Length: 206
Image (cartoon, rainbow, N blue to C red):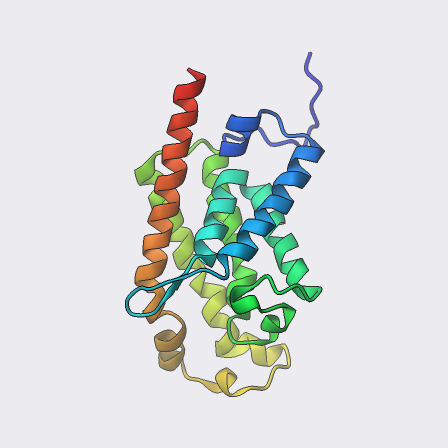
């Protein structure tokens, strides 16, 4: 008889494939490592058209895909918590003050992005095509909270700024349209990296 916790997930993420059953110590280490990856990737900007492409969203997807839904979402929450405590871990070395800015909806949405990406690998989806479809869909859904924030949620939260009175077309042009191609590239790249790594691990364990 094996000794397991009833709430423990029996997933197929890269971490469980590589490290075996997760202990609390392993999970804590992975969360801290994941927040470090998120903090570093948030500062990296790659020249791209029509706007430079940061690696922040790519890192969030990778955290979800490799750690799974539960641990991936926890990692993103801890990273955002570090920002709230004043650590400059967000893009452009921003901290919790960004939660009062125009991109706060995307920051909150990152938790859901990591969770949705992790659900796929939790369920054993590691093929490049299916995983790419998942990451593309999850990345598209990120725009729901991302656009909802400047379109009205921020005002309800008591934030009064010029960007809270923009119309829908302006918000889409400023917060969505320039980033669609880059986000699609990052979504597919994350899926291909994880699919390749999962295949390599299976071959090694065969």
